[in-house]
Length: 245
Image 1 (cartoon, rainbow, N blue to C red):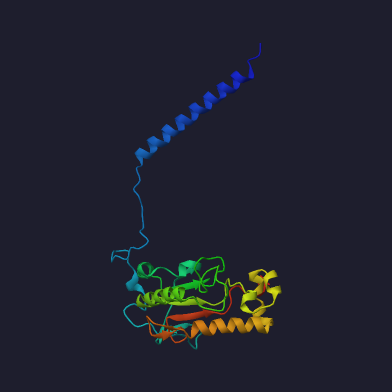
Image 2 (cartoon, one colour):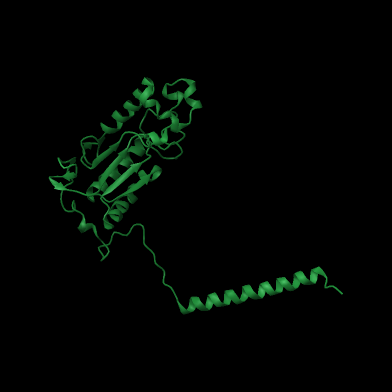
């Protein structure tokens, strides 16, 4: 006489449950045996502890000076060799609240960071970008609030001996509201960027924006972006190599 299928399934489930219970008990016992402690790094910690390596930075305790390329092809600042250890900060994160900007800059300095790439300040999907967010009617005007946050963040980076790599064209979406023909709306925003090389109207819009941004005077440094040696690098256009075409 064959055992009913339901009985076989029930027996299998009971056996599996027993195995799982045994495994969980074993894991719990191992956890007690090798009790771990919580390893937590507060994002805003700037305390002068043994792990604070800001003093290792070559630009620490002296004024940031303009970066240049020497005859040997290497980077120099104030006549001294300089090397960079940098991080990428993208999109809306480039516009932190003022109460956070100082904490972020101090935290980066604590880990020896001396270069920040401000990437995608024109990100078309963000609620906050240099033009006022994705709902802004045009990309021909700089948003005052976003610009003020960016100004303050750059000033705090400067105070902590951190240089800036400013990206100019990363994720801007050109629109008919910018004065372009309807066909621009049919193009993917990434493809639109190639037009700065071949379309005079798009190129002029790009140059207009670059001029607005680089000639803007930062009230917290009293320097324009073009004048400020903190902005050591400027990227003309993101991912414009042959690989992306």
